[in-house]
Length: 447
Ligand code: SAH
Ligand code: SF4
Ligand code: F3S
Image 1: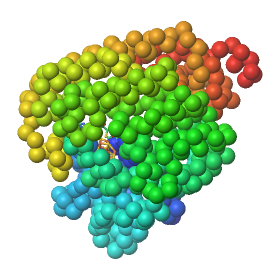
Image 2: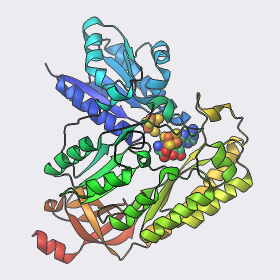
Image 3: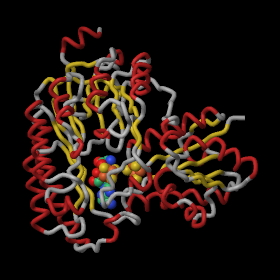
């Protein structure tokens, strides 16, 4: 008999990839995915605990499922991901209607855990961290969809321990996947029509550094670049301290490498960067940005910024604003500092009241919105290469794809273009996407 599961994913791309693995594992034991919790016999949440707000959202969502469990006691509810890793036993104690808690290293155990709940009705918890060799053997093999663009995990975990960050605590130590395996997966993907890969890890720039004899990240990029059928390469996330000269040079020397880099700065003031344990100074960061722009003048940078870290003064914040103006990021993701239990910064007293923190946040947003507007508006009238990813959500004969800068462009065109790089004239810049028109010779070539 078919069994049905409903899965919701929060957080970063790591969780997105982990959820793909969950879908794959459950498919092998006879479960089919459905779109609403009401239809499902199994409900799973893959959770994020990076900020308090993200964590509260998980509890809010779980609360929604309680009435379903009251109506259907046989319903199985499971929680995985970073909140599960952090809370473990506490989650089972607090929420009596949760049956299953699995940590970030335990996803592969899901089918067995599930069988235990189904057959014995026992609530199950598995959140232990595994050693590096075991984890390396468990890098997810996911079944492949017909997507044009895919994430490929190249490393997991993080050893940086930025003082505010929960990730090293919930994802464990950093490990790199064998380069041979990564390249084999990408070759396999190209055989199935994938044109773009995003190499994924919390800190891809330190890829291979901890494994004897392994390639550096820049060498890995060169090797991926050699693979026929790959049109575009992206990677995320980069830590500025590990952005090597060799890697910067890739932006000048590898034409398939997208001219976009997400390079989170977090703050523009040295005392705060030091308290955050980021391992670079403002000047070092700006120097790397200058080198990137020199080897690749068209490069566009994006960033993460935390506002209101303990001890951040008005002058410190002013330095962040000035840095944002100087770098001219295409976009930034800004966050209000949120103390996370178990991190070093959680021991520091907060020095800003929430109103002042929000006011700084709003000022930063205003500056960035102006800069982003100028940059994306500047594309209007230009003809840009767009990798066509699929039919756009707007429906009709609308397609969508991305420019090298990772901006979504919607435009009219035939479905045959999916998977191809086409020339699109940008006509309108919206807040998060652009609208364009296919160049006429592309239309002729497709017909
Ligand atoms: N490994 C990635 C992503 C980490 S989480 C990286 O190093 O860039 C994504 C972003 O969340 C971080 O870059 C940071 O800006 C933000 N973040 C992490 N912990 C936070 C906290 N405690 N409060 C507010 N923002 C936080
Ligand atoms: Fe968190 Fe820092 Fe690691 Fe990024 S590099 S995941 S911010 S500890
Ligand atoms: Fe969130 Fe875990 Fe990613 S805490 S940001 S889902 S690594």
